[in-house]
Length: 333
Image 1 (cartoon, rainbow, N blue to C red):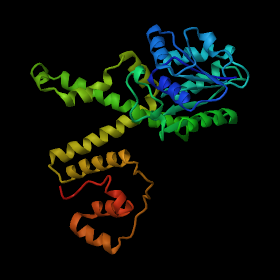
Image 2 (image 1 turned 90 degrees about the horizontal axis):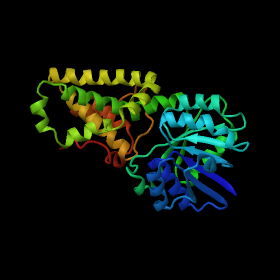
Image 3 (image 1 turned 90 degrees about the vertical axis):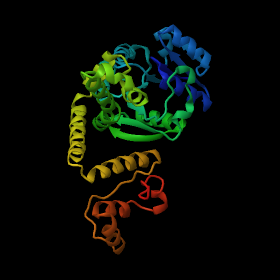
Image 4 (image 1 turned 135 degrees about the horizontal axis):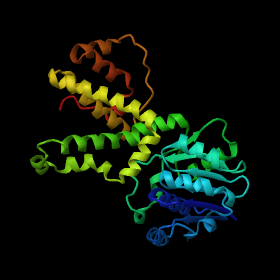
C-alpha cells in the first residue's frame, strides 16, 4: 500500500487531506501528523485522514510522498530530520511561500535518494479554521510547481499527478519567479497593512481618530493580525523581490499623490484602471496583451475623439465586447 503523509498541519494541509479523501484513492493511506493535541482532535473530527499521528516517525515512515504544511522554521526542522525515515525515491514537497530558501535547505539536508519539489496551491478563499477544511478549494485553482536547476522528473510527475487529482491546474514556474510573485501577491499586502497601521496610529490625532476607525480600518489592518516574528521571518526570506515590489508601490503611490495634488483628470483613470484590473482577475478575464504600438482603426479614431487615446486603446485591444462587460468599468455611471 502507498502512503501520503501531510505533516505540520494548517487549514490548507487539512483541506488537502479532505480533497484526497474525496477522490477515493485506491491502496493509498493518507496520514496526518501534528504535534498539537488540539489540532489533532480537530483533524480526527474532520475524518479526512486514515490516521492522525502525534509521533513524527510513525507518520512519515515509508511514505512515498510527504507534504509539509508548516511555518518556515518548522519546515526547516522537518527537512533536517525527515530523510532518514523515507524510502528510496520518496518525494517531499511543501506549501509555503519561500521556495528558493526551502529548495536550498532540501538540497542541504535531504539524502540523495529523496527528492524535493516545491509546490504551492493558489487559493482565493481558503477556510480560516481547520474545522471548516474542504477539498473544494482546490478545484480549478492554479497549483505552482516550482523547479530549480534540473529537477527529478519523477518528483515533478508525482506532484503533477496530485495536483490534477484534486482538481487543480499545474502551473510550472522557476523558484525565483515564484518567490518574486509571492512577494508581490502575498507579502507586499502585509507590508502595506503594517505601514498603514503605523502611519495612522502614529498620528498625534490617533486618540481621537480611532473613534472613526470602523470596517475599512479593520479590513486593511487585518493582515498584521499574525505573529510578528512569523511576519518578520517571511519578509526577510523574500527580502530581495519584496524590496523591488515596495519600490514599485512607492512609485504608484507617488503617481496618485501627484494626481491628487494637481487635481488631475488622471486620478479617475488610476481608479478606473485599478477597478478594471481587479475585475479582470475576479472574472478570469486576464489575457496576454501585446505592448507593440498599434495603428489606429476607424473605430479607434472615433472613440479617441470622444474618450481620449489611452482609454480608446484600452477599450479596443482587449477582445470581445461581451467578455469585456464582465470587468470593464461602465462609463455611463
